Length: 383
Image (cartoon, rainbow, N blue to C red; front, side, top):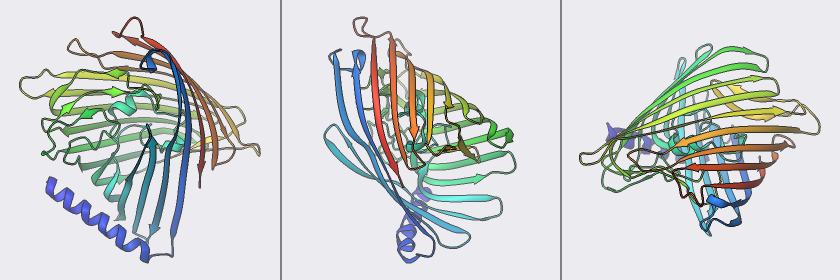
């Protein structure tokens, strides 16, 4: 099955690269640029003092093409700068076919269907960084096959994915540390959502996701920066030589015009290889937002989109978030709590300026350095 997935996905990528340059009738080219400044102190700094840094958080360029009424494809590459080095990667390369009645099938590299916040594009996440559980547990982009349907008020998405030769492509934030690079691994991931109420710009959203992941004896460790991208990782678990990982995600959200609330709970159950102990990590967040100048957040088929300002002066948004990540088990690791406040100005659907303030507290850490603060700024341009 793993060989089939890899061969089929490789074929899809090759077809995308071949067909897109030859189809100009319906082509969309776009880009997104995020530039950040981070100031942080206390536990976020190696010496417990204070520091600051700037970075091009990401620059993505993408090309979408619709070949006919049933076939479409996408190529997206990302250039990012971190700690003085520049990295270029293919973020998404896929073909989608929608000629199976109510079903769409996607072949290639794309996001696995897991997590309300993770499935929102980086430039549309309301805080500058996703909550700790999303960056630690939610899989990102992997090569595979995905089936999607959205009948009525529900949606269902499921796929099988190859995690690559190092066993950690689905955890691209660096949580696992592969220790056996010769073993290919796979994952089965699915998500179901329900929107029991949607009227105008008001809605209620519920969702449930799960993922079963072969880890092939690679070494797994939670290692998270606690929502401060330029700071050091501070939420660190013990290391486990891992056979399987089972992920669970529960999500709920509501929007009533300019007011929104959302929350997620995630759990990672680690089944260890013989000679190592099993582990379990979890966490949650609750997030509030209010658009002072009116407007709403787009929502379609179980996923949130961009903020749509209703004023000629753009949209001002106030936000608050409380998040917890528990990376303690087997007498190792720490637990982190974050309280975050945010202010966004959406000048239009292309330009956004954001400011976030974060207060962090660690349990089971060095008592002389177990809390800290951070102030984050971002300029964003999308076209």
